[in-house]
Image 1: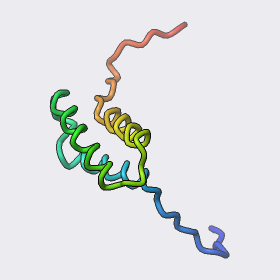
Image 2: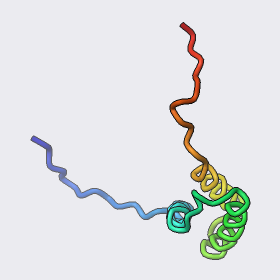
Image 3: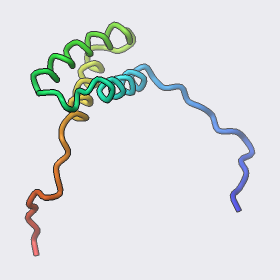
Amino acid sequence: MAKTRSEPRKLSTPTPFEQARDELFSHILRCGVLEATPEHQKEWFDDTMLYLADRYVELDEQQIAELRVLGERYCRPVVGRNATVAANV
């Protein structure tokens, strides 16, 4: 049987960086960036980073750059399991 908590859980409000990150990932999924060519992805990220910098004025240039890196990594294809992996036996 589970214990009951004496005090309720405290909700933490997300930081502006966390909000911007979540919004970026949501835009990536909605806008079809995953299927776009690398040139179109670069153009899309250029425009979207300007938008996020205007929307989240609390973020500095380093945080905006970090968001871009996270977004670009999110768009990279996953390495398939059929890739050859060398193992020491």
